[in-house]
Image 1: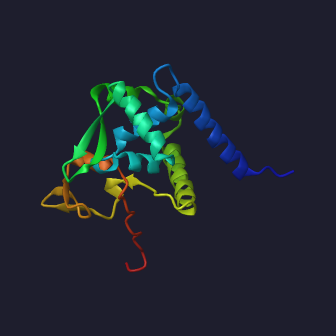
Image 2: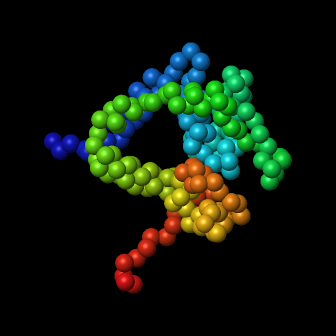
Image 3: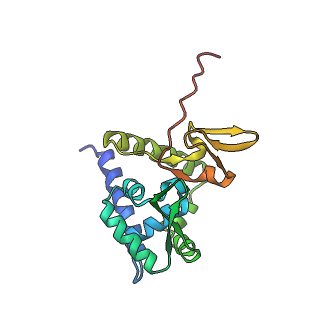
Length: 190
């Protein structure tokens, strides 16, 4: 009987996620709260509203709102208003929240033991799978600013042409919900 590789990969990825999540559960934080902290640590200022966090995590806004309320009560996040729209609520990690986000490593030790070129290949494969799943489910991909079609260099500074914002260099490494992949460059014209 031929082994179903796709089923085995799916099963193993699900199990790894469950095991890593169960290890993140402690008396103070549940896996959803840990994921929110880790997301906020990687998200740009535009991508930290409850609705965007819910979209990223594929859960309800109510779940995220309750989790953010709990995290704020624990002193791990603080609510801020964006200067562009005072009605829009956004959240930032506090210093305590930043420390907490870094404490949960999941299967970091196992990944550290894998050679760099295999990790790069694995990441490429996971991105392909994620892209397919997200397109199939009509879910936003999200992405890193430095890989976005809207990132420009103007006067030797990073600039988001979609939002008309100057960006700090470290912001280009952040997750953005407005991200749009750059078009693939074709070798045919060369």
